[in-house]
Image 1 (cartoon, rainbow, N blue to C red):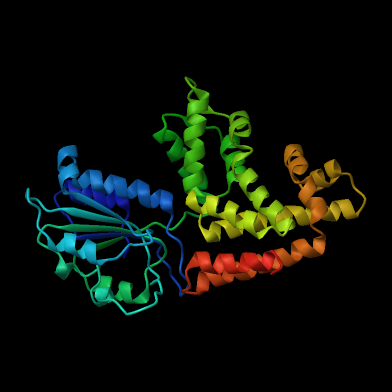
Image 2: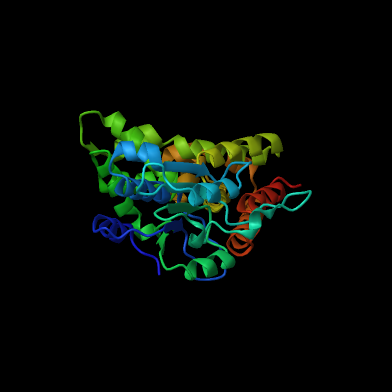
Length: 352
């Protein structure tokens, strides 16, 4: 049963420490979900601080690995977990972006897969493992964790849309400011429900307002209007031009900002639905301004999308939406690495 981070922090303060903490997206069905990078980083840092209140202890006994690295292997992680701390009290080993889908590799098979980092019987006394996964745990890892007496799972699935307002308010509090309701709605409209990117925008906004302590809708429009829309529009413009090199270059930039494939499907689908509405209005003889108004788009956004709306026919936009619906289904059901699934479908968007 997943536990809330506040409950876990209270347990640590009371002297109750587990041997393993796993931040992962908890799936109630067969489909894998993506772990939210913002929540995982926020709560993982809170957990590490609770385990090591003294910065000196943290520097001596905290070992970190990046599971997203090309050369990542579990052997060095297990080696650290088996080793006792020179200074007593146990060490904490952190693995961020742990891949739950095994990567295929050519050549001889390695022995690395024989032992799992989720087997706490391999740990030296007092050592703690903290893992933040990329996606939901595999069935095998879930089964192994279920056998561990001192393993704690923290659900880091992205919150539903109805809870985003509270999440944004929490982000603003972290920056000693608050968001007006209209500002919160506009930020969600411009950026989408992508917490790592929303956090970066909140940081920019808090710097922008200076001595003021309230972020307004005008602030959001001035600072954030071009941020995510620019990136997504650039991808769509590249797809319209059937420029594969530029398309994948822009997608790489988004992936490097921790935007996940499933989130990109949502963002692209939103833009193609807007293009479908705009082009439908143009085909009926409306001006771009009238078509944008009929589609419920702000004037600046309709102007921004005007070139793409003229390039994508309604049939082509509908076709792209069909591909994105299939991509959404495959990302939620297949055990294939999400980025590979997404990039294969992008080739279809490009007409390859």
